[in-house]
Image (tube, rainbow, N blue to C red; front, side, top):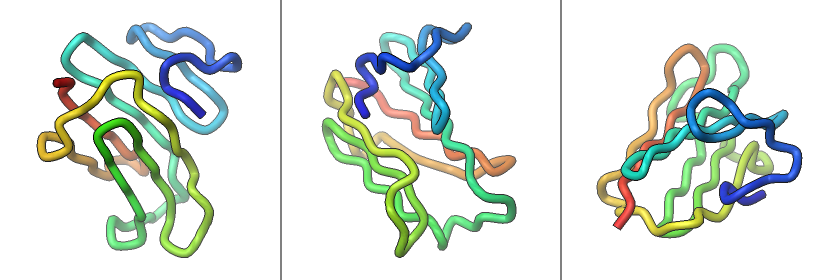
Length: 95
C-alpha cells in the first residue's frame, strides 16, 4: 500500500482518501492516518513502526493491519500515535 495514491481509495472531505482498511487526511504540514482496530485494543498490544518514509500498524505477533510508504519524509521525533475510540491516529510533520 502507498499513501501517495491507492487505486481503490475513494476521496474524502479531508484532502485524503478512504480504503477498506484505513483512511487518511492531510494538509501541507500534517498527515492523519486512521486505522480501525478491534474493540478494547490497548496500546501495549500495538506494534507501530514510524520511519522517515514509511509507517506500519498492527497488533503484536500478527501481520500488519496497515503498512505503507509515505510520499514525503516525516520528522520521526515529531510523530505520535494514540488510540481513541479504537482508531489509531498518526500525525507527522514533513521536513
